[in-house]
Image (cartoon, rainbow, N blue to C red; front, side):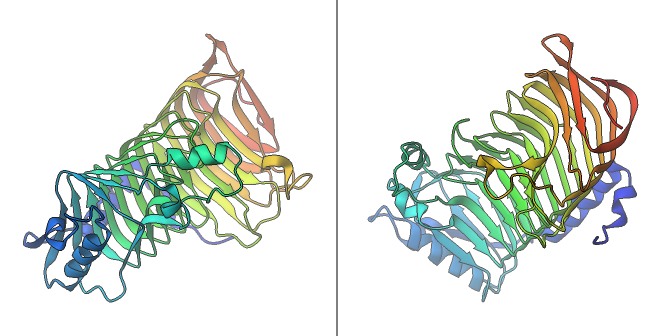
Length: 401
């Protein structure tokens, strides 16, 4: 098993402060900056702002001082665009959006690629304000009709292999797939974002993090058709606080065990979350198949559930459509997971469900001050292959072996 950072032993408040100090120090901006208005780079007559956005990026990269790419009020149709960090000489670029960036009406223009707006290999980028509207409804309708020609779809905003990223006050509407992707990044701060998609929109995760470290997500409202926040393999040192989730599938670590040799997840804290009418609350899910991965050092602190189907759940037998995994057991090792100060109501009789692997039972699971009810009555718990302990009042009663 890979070695995990010793920061887990620090108090949560101190750990959070350390994260913010690192992030704000890394993302700090100079007071002097070059202002680049996207209107000055063309697009007024064509209605297609893709080229002006690329020109503004090129100008920002070549600037010898901090640069602000400014998008004033208005609607700007933009086709899929990649902002490359390679060759960019400026490590302090801000996108300040007062308007709305809108995807082309033809969903196939976005749907054939991985991302709509993608930053790759960048350092010191911030995106603030404004609206990103991906017009995903047409693609969802195509998929629901079972038409053979439907593209997979694109994520709205992605950062790959990038450092020192800040996203603040952004609104993302109707993404074709994930709204925000953080993949292979370090030192990321996401704050005050508003993510909106219908509860029946497929695969529209709000924020997905994988192969990334020192990621902080604060005070955001997420309503979508999949996980509000999903945490994938190789994610370390995450702080998630003040999330309002619903509709959606909750906050999920996983799914994991996509491959045999998979990086683990460690040092994750989720605090002060509110779930309203979601499918899940706090979930860890792994495919029922071999893997060398793990989940270690997770703290779920201070969550409120309002009519949530599965408020607390570990599912190590995840196997949609019973393809490539029936009859197998998960190789993911889950240990040292804390659930503290979790209250509210369950929409089903079983409010706590730990369905762990018989080959790799869950260990070190702790329930502390948990009170979950079902229709004004005591709910139930269900345990398979899990070892743990309780502190304080825990309802429903634990079923640890």
